[in-house]
Length: 64
Image (cartoon, one colour):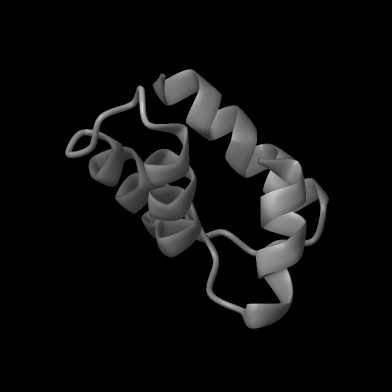
């Protein structure tokens, strides 16, 4: 799963969403605490960890 998150962070960055290394680590940590079978929860958790600007919410959702 870690590889998928790292890949997803790369996609976000390529699409103009700024994601720091610390935020990437936060995202990986968050995923250890939630059920990965719950897509909606995973999406919300990653959005919370990786998106810091309102303008990036829509592109995040589309890329997810």
